Length: 269
Ligand code: 15L
Image 1 (cartoon, rainbow, N blue to C red):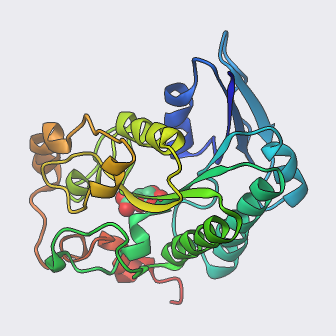
Image 2: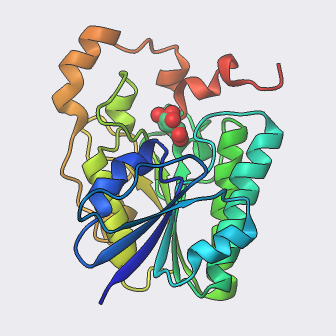
């Protein structure tokens, strides 16, 4: 049977990495973004939709006939409060409500380490379901995302999995990312586990590769069936040669959210 998956924010950083990795087989990907996207390549089973996650009518239409939604849409960096409120928080509400109205049973939400950014590294490995300590407006929007998802799971019986993504890029870009890296291949494996796990209900899992230097639990992600195949350690010598060992007094060394906890990310000033 053909499986139909809607991906919001499909033209963003993570979405672009996922398009070739999640496509294929008996699956049709409906790729939604406010930006233009490359047309379907030869044999690629994708549908392109240009729309905003804040447009309820467009989102209801986009959710029609879908088996699941992977919600990556929204700002991926810190922004002033009004933009975060509209695009990230309202956009997540609209995505879940549109999915509910269209009878979509499963939604995977791209949460972030910044939902718990102010957790001190000194506390040791960050557990699954770590209590929120957002570091920015963006981090608050991820806490809101987890809350909205929780209500839709409890009230409407939807399966909602919040993935607290570390740093999903082709390679770790700095020393902190040796701990927070989620390889694109592992991200796709984790999303596959989120899509296929029988009756997960509501979950909050870390989206991290099995890095030698990781700061986060993989227990709950593994319960979904995720098996990481990557470790940032293969890049460690190069990254450290380029950026040096982390200063123990830096935000990057002291908090899960790294530099996002510092003054450079204060939108009030
Ligand atoms: C995030 O949530 C951001 O979207 C991404 O741009 C990275 O900065 C990442 O966190 C991180 O903490 O490295």
